[in-house]
Image (tube, rainbow, N blue to C red; front, side, top):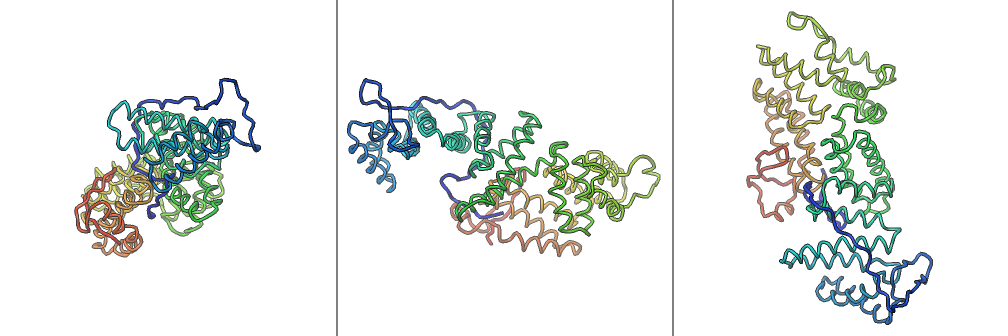
Length: 483
């Protein structure tokens, strides 16, 4: 949970997934000053081969138009900039052959004109022009083509979502990642991650492709985080780190998605951080089994006696005389079977305490192993029906909410931070149970600082004490608070 960041290239908005048509593209506008075919000779090695100042009939006039429009743009006087930009762009789209300003500033100008446009045909024309300018830039500056493609995909995702389907958007981002590899720009990662999960869970791409790109994204995030060069750049990667890894972790809930090596690498560190804790031992052992690691895996062999200590076999009774126990199913990573087993025990048990414990165990399986938060809350609430006020159930629901920042928003900022309100509501309930009071207080102390700031709620015209509904999968009403 981190504070919001405002970068023109990285302004995360509400995630939108409904697209309908492909953006139109055209060839670049390259003005020739004479009817005779002209061969452009770059002034310096690496200059664009599109029309430049030196190709114009009045090079100094074009340069002047460029300087004037750029000055107006810097002052945010876009209307004043437009006639000068039109002259500079039409006569020398590639400027001096090394600067792509005429294309990217052209995008800003079209978006400025969109704000006051009302005619549907004009609006559509301006939107078309935005994507044409990106395509023209890619032709005139081919070494930066993946950047323009990424900017185009970014605009489609956040601003013009009705101009491409989800699959088309996903494919466009994917092309950028294929071209740039681990050096892919930070602003690509979060929207691509969201689209990747959507494509995987809707079976729109194969499991193999999903696995390949999930691993690519993880490598990109690791590389970008380690190699950022300044505070601004590192802050952007920090924003990515607050979203993408958490979303990719949701894919652990898909059986056979990640290979054993993924679980070995991730959960060995988890175990080594807390090697004597039974809950950690159960989690790590179950994850390795879920990942289909070999029975001879060194960590599995090491954990086996610890599992037997922490989760001893159930005593055989008249109600569970045959087959593996629920605990055994759970520890072996057979989560669906374990859920069915525990639910059968809970439904047929006259002891409310035992039923509550079984339901809470099911909730923990959905939370920790299958990454299905809504199902986890359902069973935690079933536990509360059997044992009202049970602190452990309220603690778990609070954790579900607190973990939903990346799921319900960009990982930072207001949309992600509001989940702390409902999480703390649950932990305040847990405080009333002496058994859970200490853990609940610790969690409240940890997450209190991540509530939306006074500035955030002021910008949205809401006040401390107002009623507020946290949407997403949570859909829970709470009270507005600040740290």
